[in-house]
Length: 350
Image 1 (cartoon, rainbow, N blue to C red):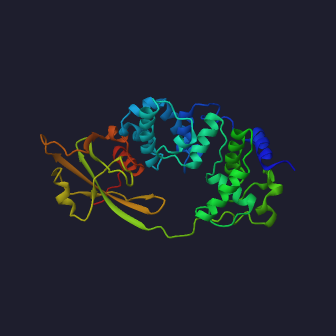
Image 2 (cartoon, rainbow, N blue to C red):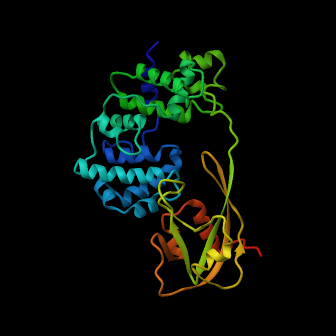
Image 3 (cartoon, rainbow, N blue to C red):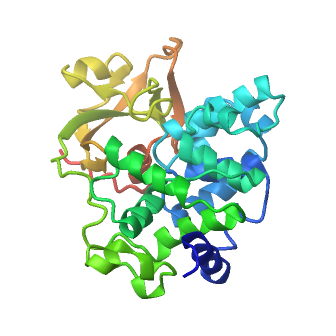
């Protein structure tokens, strides 16, 4: 029987993906951007963001010269915003330390903000053709099943065994085809549910297939009830303008623009800090939003104000026309609320 790697490489060349927008290039910047965007995000969701981001920031120097607001505005909607902030930080480091040229050695790539061992390996393999093992979520699943490795991959002892196998199975040649093949196998054949074992090039040597264990390997993250959190957001309008404030980083939606949040205070006294209220505030339909570790229910409270003109807003706060606000670096729930306002479907209830 041919080696594991040889079978994966042959399968990738015949059946793998070859036309993704970040393939067929050795441009480290483009490959780095794609690998960061693909962290915890499906390929289909990444493609339009990747194309728009690349059109706006075609190289490291343009990205480094941009403001964080400009970067996060282009990232808005893709989620996990720390990735966008780290991408920007890394671009500025590359501009300062490597004169805008993406570093080529593995250790330097690995040390960039937001880049870990597996991401650095993928960048170096695809950009420079060097020999490094990757271990993203799809590859963990392929190796856990093929090698019969028990236990949740997020545990250190299990991750160490998976890394050992990833290194041991790495071929001496054609590492880029092998690496892409492992990614493609995990995304299109070795699926989390109902894997397509009949189309897998390594099914004959797969321990999970032999033992009827594909349904339980690898096991999911240990079940834990997600806590439910609640917040009230103040949607403050003055004519056709809305008030946004910048959220602190780090933290949820760090660096993005959002509505002021009401924390433990009667709303009227907070609202009147920004202007004279015209009528009573109205309750809009709540918005549900899920994070990795908790769920958030947002209660938007809509109020119309007569602003105190001539008084400067505090730093980190902006009054913007509604259409401009929708184009700012804002979280998805804020965009939904703004969209409801501009379409007249705000769901406001007395």
